[in-house]
Length: 340
Image (cartoon, rainbow, N blue to C red; front, side, top):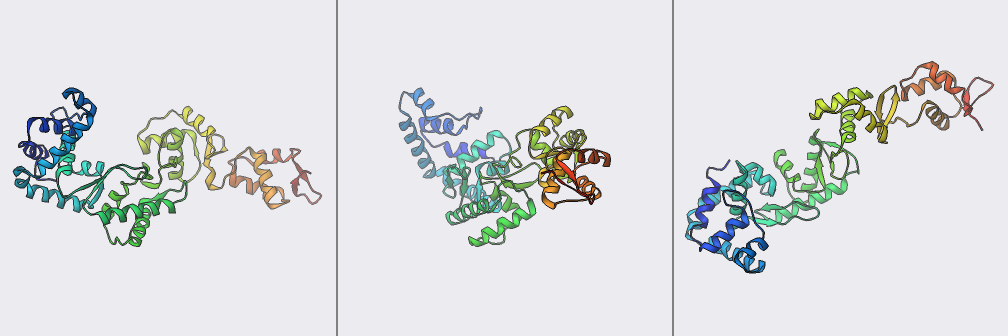
Protein backbone atom coordinates (compact mmCIF):
# COMPACT_ATOMS: atom_id res chain seq x y z
CA UNK A 1 0.00 0.00 0.00
CA UNK A 2 3.00 2.31 0.61
CA UNK A 3 5.33 3.07 -2.28
CA UNK A 4 8.36 3.41 0.00
CA UNK A 5 10.30 1.14 2.34
CA UNK A 6 9.59 2.14 5.99
CA UNK A 7 12.96 0.66 7.00
CA UNK A 8 14.88 2.86 4.53
CA UNK A 9 12.95 5.98 5.56
CA UNK A 10 13.53 5.51 9.29
CA UNK A 11 17.22 4.76 8.66
CA UNK A 12 17.57 8.01 6.75
CA UNK A 13 15.65 9.99 9.40
CA UNK A 14 18.06 8.71 12.06
CA UNK A 15 21.20 9.32 10.00
CA UNK A 16 21.91 12.87 11.23
CA UNK A 17 21.60 12.13 14.96
CA UNK A 18 24.54 11.74 17.37
CA UNK A 19 25.48 8.13 17.96
CA UNK A 20 23.92 7.79 21.43
CA UNK A 21 20.63 9.42 20.46
CA UNK A 22 20.40 7.23 17.37
CA UNK A 23 21.19 4.09 19.38
CA UNK A 24 18.59 4.94 22.05
CA UNK A 25 15.87 5.44 19.42
CA UNK A 26 16.83 2.21 17.63
CA UNK A 27 16.61 0.32 20.92
CA UNK A 28 13.39 1.95 22.10
CA UNK A 29 11.49 1.36 18.84
CA UNK A 30 13.07 -1.99 17.96
CA UNK A 31 14.63 -0.75 14.72
CA UNK A 32 17.58 -3.13 14.75
CA UNK A 33 17.69 -6.22 12.56
CA UNK A 34 16.36 -8.30 15.47
CA UNK A 35 13.33 -6.05 15.81
CA UNK A 36 13.44 -6.13 19.62
CA UNK A 37 12.44 -3.00 21.55
CA UNK A 38 14.03 -2.33 24.95
CA UNK A 39 12.74 -0.69 28.12
CA UNK A 40 13.99 2.60 29.53
CA UNK A 41 15.41 0.72 32.51
CA UNK A 42 17.36 -1.77 30.37
CA UNK A 43 18.93 0.96 28.26
CA UNK A 44 19.67 3.09 31.34
CA UNK A 45 21.54 0.20 32.97
CA UNK A 46 23.67 -0.20 29.83
CA UNK A 47 24.73 3.45 29.92
CA UNK A 48 24.83 3.74 33.72
CA UNK A 49 22.19 6.50 33.81
CA UNK A 50 18.58 6.76 35.02
CA UNK A 51 15.51 5.74 33.04
CA UNK A 52 14.36 9.38 33.18
CA UNK A 53 17.57 10.48 31.50
CA UNK A 54 17.00 7.89 28.75
CA UNK A 55 13.48 9.26 28.31
CA UNK A 56 14.95 12.76 27.90
CA UNK A 57 17.41 11.50 25.29
CA UNK A 58 14.56 9.74 23.45
CA UNK A 59 12.36 12.86 23.42
CA UNK A 60 15.27 15.07 22.36
CA UNK A 61 16.15 12.63 19.59
CA UNK A 62 12.58 12.71 18.22
CA UNK A 63 12.63 16.52 18.24
CA UNK A 64 16.01 16.51 16.49
CA UNK A 65 14.66 14.20 13.75
CA UNK A 66 11.75 16.60 13.15
CA UNK A 67 14.17 19.52 12.78
CA UNK A 68 16.60 17.66 10.52
CA UNK A 69 17.32 18.03 6.82
CA UNK A 70 16.47 14.34 6.45
CA UNK A 71 12.95 15.06 7.68
CA UNK A 72 12.58 17.77 5.04
CA UNK A 73 13.79 15.38 2.35
CA UNK A 74 10.99 12.99 3.28
CA UNK A 75 8.15 15.54 3.22
CA UNK A 76 6.51 13.86 0.24
CA UNK A 77 6.97 10.44 1.87
CA UNK A 78 5.22 11.54 5.05
CA UNK A 79 2.46 13.23 3.04
CA UNK A 80 1.89 9.96 1.18
CA UNK A 81 1.63 8.11 4.47
CA UNK A 82 -0.94 10.62 5.68
CA UNK A 83 -3.02 10.21 2.50
CA UNK A 84 -3.04 6.44 2.89
CA UNK A 85 -3.88 6.77 6.59
CA UNK A 86 -6.80 9.12 5.87
CA UNK A 87 -8.11 6.77 3.17
CA UNK A 88 -8.17 3.98 5.76
CA UNK A 89 -10.27 6.12 8.10
CA UNK A 90 -8.14 8.89 9.57
CA UNK A 91 -8.42 7.42 13.10
CA UNK A 92 -7.27 3.85 13.64
CA UNK A 93 -6.23 1.40 16.33
CA UNK A 94 -2.47 0.91 16.14
CA UNK A 95 -2.80 -2.78 15.25
CA UNK A 96 -5.13 -1.82 12.36
CA UNK A 97 -2.57 0.63 10.96
CA UNK A 98 0.18 -1.96 11.15
CA UNK A 99 -1.94 -4.75 9.67
CA UNK A 100 -2.62 -2.60 6.61
CA UNK A 101 0.74 -0.88 6.12
CA UNK A 102 3.39 -3.34 7.29
CA UNK A 103 4.61 -6.06 4.93
CA UNK A 104 6.45 -7.92 7.70
CA UNK A 105 7.14 -7.86 11.45
CA UNK A 106 10.19 -5.60 11.19
CA UNK A 107 8.26 -3.07 9.10
CA UNK A 108 5.77 -2.69 11.97
CA UNK A 109 8.38 -1.15 14.27
CA UNK A 110 9.61 1.22 11.56
CA UNK A 111 6.05 2.38 10.82
CA UNK A 112 5.43 3.12 14.52
CA UNK A 113 8.64 5.17 14.54
CA UNK A 114 7.58 7.14 11.46
CA UNK A 115 4.11 7.76 12.95
CA UNK A 116 5.81 9.03 16.11
CA UNK A 117 8.21 11.48 14.49
CA UNK A 118 5.85 12.76 11.76
CA UNK A 119 3.95 15.94 12.63
CA UNK A 120 0.87 14.60 10.84
CA UNK A 121 -0.12 12.00 13.44
CA UNK A 122 -1.20 12.06 17.09
CA UNK A 123 -1.24 9.06 19.39
CA UNK A 124 -3.77 8.21 22.10
CA UNK A 125 -2.62 5.70 24.69
CA UNK A 126 -4.57 2.57 25.53
CA UNK A 127 -7.33 3.08 28.12
CA UNK A 128 -9.98 0.94 29.79
CA UNK A 129 -12.36 1.51 26.87
CA UNK A 130 -10.10 1.99 23.85
CA UNK A 131 -7.00 0.44 22.33
CA UNK A 132 -3.83 2.41 21.54
CA UNK A 133 -4.73 4.50 18.49
CA UNK A 134 -3.50 7.10 16.03
CA UNK A 135 -5.37 9.92 14.31
CA UNK A 136 -4.92 13.04 12.19
CA UNK A 137 -7.99 14.91 13.50
CA UNK A 138 -8.72 15.50 17.21
CA UNK A 139 -12.40 16.22 16.63
CA UNK A 140 -12.96 13.11 14.52
CA UNK A 141 -11.24 10.95 17.14
CA UNK A 142 -13.47 12.35 19.88
CA UNK A 143 -16.62 11.84 17.78
CA UNK A 144 -15.71 8.20 17.07
CA UNK A 145 -15.02 7.50 20.75
CA UNK A 146 -18.34 9.03 21.81
CA UNK A 147 -20.19 7.02 19.15
CA UNK A 148 -18.47 3.79 20.27
CA UNK A 149 -19.41 4.49 23.89
CA UNK A 150 -23.06 5.14 22.94
CA UNK A 151 -23.08 2.01 20.78
CA UNK A 152 -21.81 -0.15 23.64
CA UNK A 153 -24.38 1.26 26.06
CA UNK A 154 -27.19 0.51 23.59
CA UNK A 155 -26.31 -3.20 23.39
CA UNK A 156 -28.07 -5.88 25.42
CA UNK A 157 -25.73 -8.04 27.51
CA UNK A 158 -25.50 -11.25 25.47
CA UNK A 159 -27.23 -10.24 22.27
CA UNK A 160 -25.44 -10.94 18.99
CA UNK A 161 -26.02 -8.71 15.96
CA UNK A 162 -25.15 -9.58 12.33
CA UNK A 163 -22.40 -7.37 10.92
CA UNK A 164 -24.53 -5.52 8.36
CA UNK A 165 -27.10 -4.56 11.00
CA UNK A 166 -24.36 -3.68 13.49
CA UNK A 167 -22.66 -1.31 11.03
CA UNK A 168 -25.98 0.44 10.44
CA UNK A 169 -26.43 0.85 14.18
CA UNK A 170 -22.91 2.25 14.55
CA UNK A 171 -23.52 4.61 11.61
CA UNK A 172 -26.60 5.97 13.38
CA UNK A 173 -24.58 6.76 16.51
CA UNK A 174 -21.86 8.40 14.37
CA UNK A 175 -24.45 10.63 12.68
CA UNK A 176 -25.64 11.76 16.10
CA UNK A 177 -22.05 12.89 16.70
CA UNK A 178 -21.88 14.67 13.32
CA UNK A 179 -20.01 12.00 11.31
CA UNK A 180 -21.94 10.96 8.19
CA UNK A 181 -21.77 8.56 5.24
CA UNK A 182 -18.61 6.53 5.70
CA UNK A 183 -17.96 3.26 3.81
CA UNK A 184 -18.58 0.01 5.68
CA UNK A 185 -14.88 -0.90 5.56
CA UNK A 186 -14.04 2.35 7.40
CA UNK A 187 -16.76 1.70 9.99
CA UNK A 188 -15.33 -1.79 10.55
CA UNK A 189 -11.88 -0.32 11.20
CA UNK A 190 -13.28 2.22 13.65
CA UNK A 191 -15.06 -0.55 15.56
CA UNK A 192 -11.65 -2.14 16.14
CA UNK A 193 -10.72 0.89 18.29
CA UNK A 194 -13.10 -0.22 21.05
CA UNK A 195 -12.02 -2.68 23.74
CA UNK A 196 -15.63 -3.23 24.84
CA UNK A 197 -17.15 -4.26 21.49
CA UNK A 198 -16.10 -7.40 19.63
CA UNK A 199 -16.82 -9.74 16.75
CA UNK A 200 -17.08 -13.51 17.07
CA UNK A 201 -15.79 -16.02 14.48
CA UNK A 202 -19.18 -16.06 12.74
CA UNK A 203 -19.06 -12.32 12.05
CA UNK A 204 -21.60 -11.36 14.73
CA UNK A 205 -21.00 -8.38 17.01
CA UNK A 206 -21.78 -7.66 20.65
CA UNK A 207 -20.32 -6.75 24.01
CA UNK A 208 -16.86 -8.25 24.35
CA UNK A 209 -17.57 -9.64 27.82
CA UNK A 210 -20.29 -11.86 26.39
CA UNK A 211 -19.27 -15.56 26.07
CA UNK A 212 -20.91 -15.40 22.63
CA UNK A 213 -18.28 -12.88 21.47
CA UNK A 214 -15.12 -13.72 23.40
CA UNK A 215 -14.97 -17.43 22.62
CA UNK A 216 -13.03 -19.32 25.29
CA UNK A 217 -13.99 -22.99 25.25
CA UNK A 218 -15.94 -25.85 23.65
CA UNK A 219 -19.21 -24.67 25.22
CA UNK A 220 -18.95 -21.31 23.48
CA UNK A 221 -18.16 -22.93 20.13
CA UNK A 222 -21.11 -25.30 20.67
CA UNK A 223 -23.42 -22.36 21.36
CA UNK A 224 -22.47 -20.63 18.10
CA UNK A 225 -22.80 -23.91 16.19
CA UNK A 226 -26.33 -24.52 17.46
CA UNK A 227 -27.29 -20.88 16.92
CA UNK A 228 -26.10 -21.01 13.33
CA UNK A 229 -27.94 -24.35 12.76
CA UNK A 230 -31.18 -22.94 14.16
CA UNK A 231 -32.69 -26.18 15.47
CA UNK A 232 -31.82 -29.03 17.90
CA UNK A 233 -28.73 -31.10 17.10
CA UNK A 234 -27.31 -34.38 18.35
CA UNK A 235 -24.11 -33.86 20.31
CA UNK A 236 -22.14 -35.75 17.63
CA UNK A 237 -23.48 -33.30 15.04
CA UNK A 238 -22.49 -30.39 17.27
CA UNK A 239 -18.92 -31.74 17.44
CA UNK A 240 -18.81 -32.05 13.64
CA UNK A 241 -20.30 -28.56 13.29
CA UNK A 242 -17.60 -27.05 15.50
CA UNK A 243 -14.92 -28.59 13.30
CA UNK A 244 -16.63 -27.48 10.08
CA UNK A 245 -17.34 -23.89 11.17
CA UNK A 246 -14.22 -23.14 13.19
CA UNK A 247 -11.64 -25.74 12.14
CA UNK A 248 -11.43 -26.88 15.76
CA UNK A 249 -11.33 -30.65 16.23
CA UNK A 250 -13.56 -31.65 19.16
CA UNK A 251 -14.29 -35.14 20.47
CA UNK A 252 -18.06 -35.95 20.64
CA UNK A 253 -17.80 -37.21 24.24
CA UNK A 254 -16.09 -33.97 25.30
CA UNK A 255 -18.79 -31.96 23.53
CA UNK A 256 -21.52 -33.96 25.30
CA UNK A 257 -19.95 -33.34 28.70
CA UNK A 258 -19.70 -29.60 28.06
CA UNK A 259 -23.31 -29.36 26.86
CA UNK A 260 -24.55 -31.06 30.02
CA UNK A 261 -22.74 -28.56 32.26
CA UNK A 262 -23.99 -25.35 30.61
CA UNK A 263 -27.44 -23.87 31.34
CA UNK A 264 -27.59 -22.36 27.84
CA UNK A 265 -28.35 -25.85 26.49
CA UNK A 266 -31.40 -28.05 27.05
CA UNK A 267 -31.49 -31.82 26.47
CA UNK A 268 -34.62 -32.31 24.34
CA UNK A 269 -34.23 -35.92 23.26
CA UNK A 270 -31.80 -38.82 23.32
CA UNK A 271 -28.51 -36.98 22.81
CA UNK A 272 -30.34 -34.01 21.23
CA UNK A 273 -29.67 -30.49 22.48
CA UNK A 274 -31.38 -27.14 21.88
CA UNK A 275 -30.74 -23.61 23.11
CA UNK A 276 -32.70 -22.51 26.15
CA UNK A 277 -33.21 -19.10 24.52
CA UNK A 278 -35.37 -20.79 21.86
CA UNK A 279 -38.01 -21.33 24.54
CA UNK A 280 -37.12 -24.87 25.56
CA UNK A 281 -37.53 -25.55 29.28
CA UNK A 282 -34.85 -27.45 31.21
CA UNK A 283 -35.67 -30.68 33.05
CA UNK A 284 -37.00 -34.16 32.33
CA UNK A 285 -40.37 -34.85 30.66
CA UNK A 286 -42.39 -34.61 33.89
CA UNK A 287 -40.83 -31.18 34.56
CA UNK A 288 -41.96 -30.04 31.12
CA UNK A 289 -45.50 -31.33 31.77
CA UNK A 290 -45.54 -29.55 35.14
CA UNK A 291 -44.48 -26.27 33.50
CA UNK A 292 -47.19 -26.59 30.83
CA UNK A 293 -49.99 -27.31 33.35
CA UNK A 294 -48.70 -24.56 35.61
CA UNK A 295 -49.06 -22.02 32.81
CA UNK A 296 -52.18 -23.28 31.04
CA UNK A 297 -54.22 -25.12 33.66
CA UNK A 298 -55.95 -28.50 33.11
CA UNK A 299 -55.43 -30.06 29.66
CA UNK A 300 -56.45 -33.23 27.86
CA UNK A 301 -53.90 -35.96 27.29
CA UNK A 302 -53.83 -35.10 23.57
CA UNK A 303 -53.13 -31.41 24.29
CA UNK A 304 -50.37 -32.30 26.74
CA UNK A 305 -48.73 -34.66 24.23
CA UNK A 306 -48.88 -31.98 21.52
CA UNK A 307 -47.33 -29.33 23.76
CA UNK A 308 -44.63 -31.57 25.24
CA UNK A 309 -43.53 -32.59 21.74
CA UNK A 310 -42.84 -28.94 20.99
CA UNK A 311 -40.28 -29.12 23.80
CA UNK A 312 -38.97 -32.68 23.62
CA UNK A 313 -38.25 -35.32 20.99
CA UNK A 314 -39.99 -38.19 22.81
CA UNK A 315 -42.61 -40.84 22.02
CA UNK A 316 -46.28 -40.42 22.98
CA UNK A 317 -45.98 -43.47 25.24
CA UNK A 318 -43.16 -41.78 27.20
CA UNK A 319 -45.38 -38.79 27.88
CA UNK A 320 -48.28 -41.06 28.89
CA UNK A 321 -46.05 -42.89 31.39
CA UNK A 322 -44.96 -39.60 32.94
CA UNK A 323 -48.59 -38.54 33.37
CA UNK A 324 -48.95 -41.44 35.83
CA UNK A 325 -46.56 -39.65 38.21
CA UNK A 326 -48.15 -38.53 41.47
CA UNK A 327 -47.32 -34.94 40.53
CA UNK A 328 -50.44 -35.04 38.30
CA UNK A 329 -54.12 -35.77 38.86
CA UNK A 330 -56.66 -36.96 36.27
CA UNK A 331 -59.95 -35.10 36.57
CA UNK A 332 -63.38 -36.65 36.04
CA UNK A 333 -63.61 -35.09 32.56
CA UNK A 334 -60.37 -36.82 31.51
CA UNK A 335 -58.14 -33.75 31.71
CA UNK A 336 -54.95 -33.63 33.77
CA UNK A 337 -53.96 -31.06 36.32
CA UNK A 338 -51.27 -30.60 38.99
CA UNK A 339 -51.84 -32.61 42.15
CA UNK A 340 -52.54 -30.54 45.23
